[in-house]
Image 1 (tube, rainbow, N blue to C red):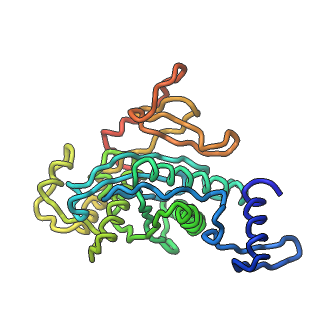
Image 2 (image 1 turned 30 degrees about the vertical axis):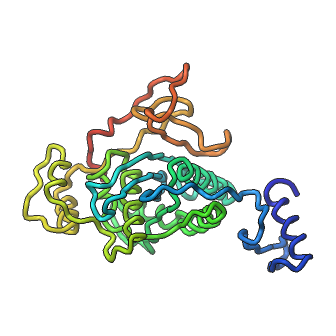
Image 3 (image 1 turned 180 degrees about the vertical axis):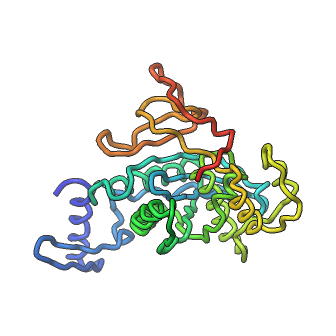
Length: 314
């Protein structure tokens, strides 16, 4: 056997023969299944040196059927305040719709997303990765029915478990937080595409959780929020995020920042440079903020949205 699987099995076999680790296995009609704790292998091929952590930084991840938002945030003052939270960097990963890829290719795509997330943690010194808790079985009719089917199909638990394994080999902590109103708050607070804005709010909640905050929702800072409301007028009678969220939904006010339109690799799409998701034949694109990517000699501008202007996304 070649690759990481062969290296892991050979190391595990040697350690097990020396009675230094435990492993379990089972045989079915087609395969041999071996279960190994990666922390038991000092020479695991994916083991990395610990991240040089910077206080008050975390990476949030927001999962969507076709897009995954990765955002690094910083808050060294008070993690309960949005006004003290800064969005340092964000990547938007576009993947194929659930149900259109073979299982092995889905695993490879998720592994590439995990590697990119850990790379961002290493770049910015964030030793905390934050997911929103699973949404469970979504039930609804009308125009949301097909969307919820895609969300239910999405291999959320597979990605989280894979991330925990890879992050553990770099001494990065992975936690889950309550995700209610994260899209509303994120889009109002951070200038980034919808999934990345929501991921930034999820990352802030991870910082609040690590600071032992009882409520991970941010404080309702009315004066700050009014300044962030663009061209709309924020009624002063709102006193909670729940009331504001319900009012926005009822009025169908545009607050979500749209995702880029599909583009070709190695091009420019609006404010973003487009790259492949790791290997050439793997489906998936990564949208990187252009101010963090060096300009190439042969990039061409493609049709894209201006993310500074929020529009309503049904």
